[in-house]
Picture (cartoon, helix red, strand yellow):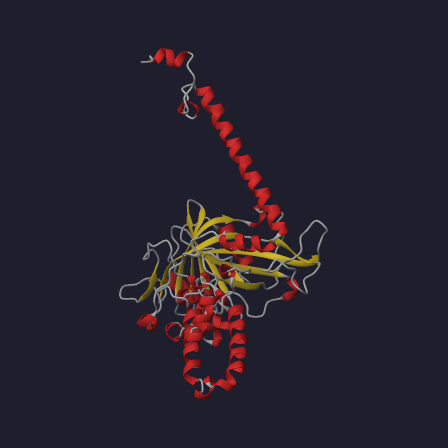
Length: 436
C-alpha cells in the first residue's frame, strides 16, 4: 500500500489532481488555462460558423430564429376578459386583441353563404391573404406558439378553416419595431371606461390645456416646480405658502380655485428628502386623480450635451399603453399637451411604458444627411428602407428626464370616506402580469 508521503512526493499525479491540485498557485494556473482553452474553442466555433453562414445564408436565418431571449415582455400573462369587460379597471387584458376578435367574429357571421362555393375559392383566398397582410402590419397581439409548426401543419389548419397565427412566438425573431414600442391607439377605449370617465374621453378634453403646478405643503422643490413648467406647455407654477400663520389650502380647495379660473389640470409635486418623490395629477373640475411615484429625476442642465427648450408646443408620443388602465393613463397625458403641436419647434415628448414604468423623455430632433461612418436605416429583413436612403435623425435631449410609476387612481379629487376609487397599485404580485 502506497503511503500519503510517497504519493505526494514523487509519484505521478493522478487524473483528479490536474483539476483539483493541492497547490494554490497551480490551481490558479490551471483555472486560467482552462478559461483560455474554452475561449479559444468558442472563438474557433464562432469563426467557423461565420464561414459556413457566408456560404449558406439560410443557416444564419435559422440561427437567428432560435436565438431569441425569453424576456418578461415575451412571458407576459393576460387576463381573460370574459364577463369582466363591463368593469375593466384592475384587469390586464389586451384591448387590441379583444377588438380584433370581435371584428373577426362579425366578419364570419356576416359572410355570405355563397362564399364557400368552388368557383369563388381563388378570389376568397386572395382577399384573405391581403387581409392577413394588413393584420400583420397592425398586429399588437401577444406571442403565440403556433408559429413553431411546419408549413404542412399550417396548410392543414387552413384547410380546416382556422387561420394561422401571424404573431412571432418566443422562439422566433421579433420584428422591428418590436411589440414593446408600438404606438398607442387611443381610439380603442372600451365603452365602459368612457362612461366612467367622460371628461377624459369627451371631445372637449382635446382643447388646449391650461395647467396649474404647485408643490406639497412645506416643500422646498420650487426649482423643480419651475422645471415642470418647461415640460408641460401653457403651465403656471404657483409657490405654495408655508408660513406658520398662513392658511393651508387643501387639494380640494386648490382644485376649486383652479377650475374657477379655467384651468384644465392641477399638478402637485411631492417631496421626499428634498427630492421629487411623487406627482399627483388632477383632471379638473371633478377628477379623476392619478397618483404617480417619481424615480431617477435628472434635470436638463445635468444631462451631457443637453439643449435649451423653447416655448414651442411639443409633439406627444405614447408607446405601449395596451390595457384599459393604460388607455386611461394615456388619455390623461393627452390632455396635458395641446392637440396641435408647433412643428417648427421640432420638440417631442415621449412617454414609453415598459413593465408598468413610464419613462418620460423630451428631445429636439433634426433630419440630416448620413455620415460615411454611420450605418443605413434597415428594416426587419435587414434591408435598407426605401425612401430613407442617406437620411439620419439627430436627437438632442432637453430634459428633464424621470420615471413614473402609477400607484393609485381615484374617481374624484383625493381619497375620501365613501368615495369610489377605481384602482390601487400593488394588487398583483405576479412578475409576468402588468397593468398598463
